[in-house]
Length: 440
Image 1 (cartoon, one colour):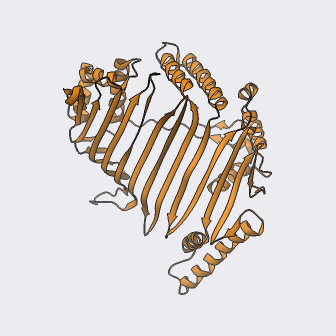
Image 2 (cartoon, rainbow, N blue to C red):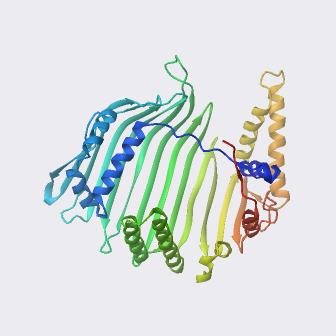
Image 3 (cartoon, one colour):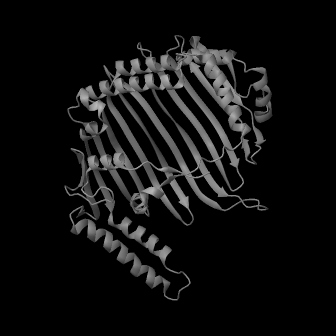
């Protein structure tokens, strides 16, 4: 629906009136500039060293410049806010413990930052080939002039091991108990809750398989609460499989060399672009694919989901010099499941927004509007063959092949893509007039 509205707005605007928005004035923030300056100094100290164990050793002895120490003292209450201390552990292991003390800071833009004490620990094996990192952070709060957010019960747990190629493999993730966004009202002790996220967690891993590597990433959410409604069991899980291990090691090495080459930014960007392009060729030649294990969400006890994968068919050298030709080689297949009960529930939600709740017969109006909306959606999808009804679900197979998108083998006339032809969309975008900068 969002895509449909946006495309229509663009199509209806005369080309000569299309304008790019004026750049927003930068927001002054000592908090952000101080963190950026600290990151720059630390990056320079680490240099091209990409060994995690050696990076920890460098940081344990590192001190920021005198001028920056004064700023860090003001913002974080300490000249070395995230002090890393080394201690010897059992069986020759080395432990690096670090702490960020609880503190509060009011930025010049009236944003208030406040956090509880953060504790982290990294345990390094005797040979420096295994690094096990964990951290806990009870709370973080950011309150602006119009909105504020609070994050509670943050924990981190990662374990990495270094291969002979120098690449680090491992798995881990971040968990957050809750994230709350509230409006800020002058004079009120606590603003209205805009939404709340409960039970958020991320996971990522990289696993070697001989000469190939599989990489996975994703997140899950127990519940997203907005007003009196909620979405539950949100999941997003994706894998990149058959990635060439040696090409990944070469990419890591070449990108680090480019970043420390001393070249001008444009020249450095050009080198990095060529490096990424070379890696892409090697990855596709090795048969790299993207697998969608699970994209799903629940609403009122029902779950909608998407599963599928994306491959590339017979890619040749010339395809990398023409993006649209490479796009034609994409082969994608996605299986979609949408419970009819969920369509009915969402239709009722939409209907309730359209009907005046104060009307004497508002309940009857909502019932009628909800049935009309659900009937229109289900009827169009099933009657026109874009989906089939099976076991109380609307099911459809979305395919991308030869530059065209189909639903159950049929083309949906999407605004801007009437024939389901991605190639035509690409040509239309290339031929469109450049936007006119907005007047200052």
